[in-house]
Image (cartoon, rainbow, N blue to C red; front, side, top):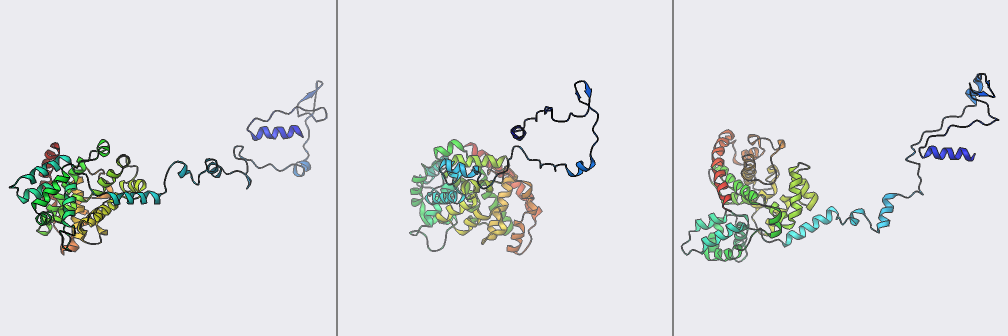
Length: 390
């Protein structure tokens, strides 16, 4: 009996079963000899084979013995061993809810978008001239997101603005006056990308993309509606402000997000939500509302990637969506993400259906595409030269 138990243990651990040695009391196997005499072959007993044979034992995986309620569960034991409620806690990780809450809290404290230092210094030189022309001031401001945000916030402050929201840089500068704009210049002239962000990311490509989207959106508005509004330009300029916002909060983390998006592990927005709890559209909307930006700008930031979901100012959002698409398609700067097959073609963009609904007619999309091709070629050359000077 002891030998039988031991052999079962060996088999359970995966060792080969040893060949049994016949005892004097056991019959010899067929063909074996004892004392030189060959044992005759045995005749099988049909009745014993059918009745006396034992049923085969179930085959068990030797690596997975059966367990019961008394067995220790490893996932429970490791938490008890480490004295934590969850393995995420042990690794210093936070729940998605906690990550989102932290990001939103940090957004509440962010009041400035970093300006490109070279542009800010040029802006300060322009407004310091006693004979400065207001159009020069507006043109200088319109080249930079950080400068635009500060001037619009000043113009919409309670002490300057009426109840009507100001989205136009022209109107903002006229309301503030050159003296107030000079005061703003004193502040923004020292703004530049934080050293931590500057070491990880060079946002000049995104700045060119934003400036290109603004110019293209404004040009599209002129072709489609016959007039141009500064609000569309500013909406295009700030449509990707959320990327600057997130990279300002956590430069290295956003660098990793951009790298994973480039390697097409997941869409950029999904990676942003996984890391920050919000995507760049929501981060940009929070920043814009906190800084008193108008609803056209807010809607463009929120829905330039899905204009059919815009809650208001659908025409302006559609124009920015098309401007963003063309800027990517023609390589005007780089936004951190590229066009894919799911983005479709310019002539089939869902924004055209919205434009048709808003203006009451279908624009000549093919003709507009040809005109924009010429316009963007010139724009790209101008922006490339401008970027070299930064």
